[in-house]
Amino acid sequence: MVIPAPGRMVPHDGEFRLSDATRLHAPESVARLVRELLTPATGLSLSDAAAPGDGVISLRLDHDPELGEEGYRLRVTSTEVVATAAAKGGLRWAVQTLRQLLPDQVYGDGPARGIDWRLPCVEIADVPAYAWRGALLDVARWCHPLRFLYRYVDLLALHKLNTLHLHLTDDQGWRFEVRRYPRLTEVGSIRRESPLGHARDERGDGVPHGGFYTQGELRDLVDYAALRGVRIMPEVDLPGHTQAAIAAYPELGNDPARQLAVGTTWGISTHVLNVADATLDVVRHVLDEVVEVFPFEYVHIGGDEVPSREWAASPHARRRAAELGLDRVADLQGWWTAQLTEHLARHGRRTAAWDEILDRRPAAGTTVFAWRGEDRILAAQHAGHEVVAAPYTHTYFDWAEHDGPDEPLAIAGTLPLERVYGFAPGHVLGVQGQVWSEYLPTTDRVEWRAFPRLAALAEVGWSGPGGDFPGFRARLTAHLGRLDHLRVNYRPLD
Ligand code: ACM
Image 1: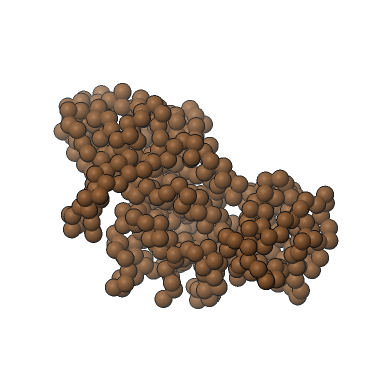
Image 2: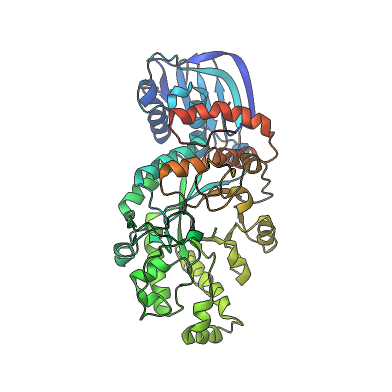
């Protein structure tokens, strides 16, 4: 009952029993991962073996072009366990599969007594369908605790999801420490209050909310995730969704005489960054610190929902647009994207952005996150871009799964599990599930919305689309036993 389903899995009779005599032969970082994942519950020390052989779990690199960066083969016999992959990435996923083959108690955080730790004999050959299998977590609207980010990384890795997209900044909060501009967090990470009920109710809770992550904390998280095969892509949303930054530094806004507050309502703020050279410099400096903390090749610069009303009203912005030969001030967004793409390229990084940037002819190498609908996937492809498929119709897990009376308040709905599982992304770089957190103030709520739909999307991303839903649902029922041991607050199946 491995989820996501392996490409090829042939069960055999018999089993491999783990005991105090079982030893481990693997590259150092992979051996560390095996011990971190298996030792707490099993209590087995899995000491090093000099070579594969009887009683040894061996994971080794082996040139095999069919496996790519993330594929692996796994063979369990009654005498040994052998995993091979062309890269460490594949070995890491083999470890996750091995863990799923063990009794569910392996997911408990303390020693589980009286369990017979055995693996069923099996042969697996497994290669992901898509290279990008991501999950966005919005920590801007609610600053979820650092320890939850670690847990989320663990949950992604368990589902062979390889990318955590951290939405670090928005109108209602700036969560990334920037050494050069301390007010971004001193001021921008704290809001006076949050909406009570749905945004349309226009009520506030009167309770301040704040928090941010230091660069050191994020570096440690990056390392922890890397050991598990999870890359972290930071998002600094620009030039819209920046009210928190403008509250910290009013000179970044279009009316520097006006002191804005960090956003206290959900929705799209009309306040956006101005188009002065000095503002562009600030943003470049911010990105300089972002790339120091996050080694992943991709940096997401947002680009979604940028109202141009303030630019239209600003003589400076209008002059800028005219100097640049732009027909409309709204096209200044394209100029923003181009400047930042160029800057990130100087750092050797690729720019990722939401699909609104397509409206302003972005640089060819920009990776488009198509969210406004499936047609946006095709539009981005036709324009020659690499695409991550993230349409709200199938991947916005902040939407309620159903509209029943017991569902916690959601931004919208519904997005049932079956629709997620039925998603056919097409020929794209990959897929990504979004957990925007306006209505998810607690990590319990985040887990309720994310699971099990993220498991369904993980299977689309790894095993490919077109899976049989009743079969998936049956396997998922068993899979939830694992999440039970991890005490994940998932939404039970209907
Ligand atoms: C988005 O949902 N604004 C990307």
